[in-house]
Amino acid sequence: MSHQKYRWVDKIIDLAIALEAALAGKQSSGVTYRLQVRAGAFLASDADPAGALFDDIKVLYGITTVVERSSGVPFGVGPGGLCHATEA
Image (cartoon, rainbow, N blue to C red; front, side, top):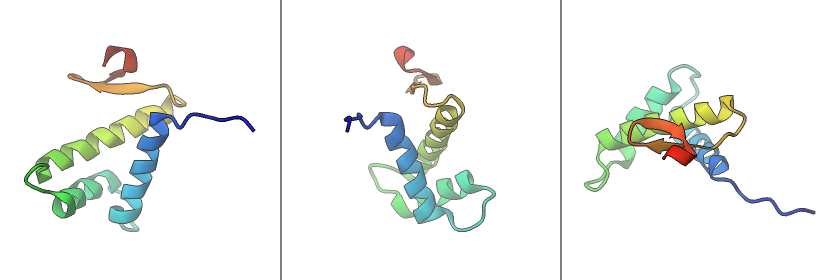
């Protein structure tokens, strides 16, 4: 049995799935927006305000979309948004 590294992209996908399971509800449309609003409402703190969480969820789903469409090609988040990991 070979040992495989648990890639960071797998962790991102797992996080997105967990957030959907915990916060998204049963409707299939508007999942990202519902997650943004609910994460801001339930998880906000002085250190991580609702607006920042709202933006973070949008970035998270941008990353998962890129990863799914690119068959796991590593991407990162740089100052200008999503970019190849070597540019981040």
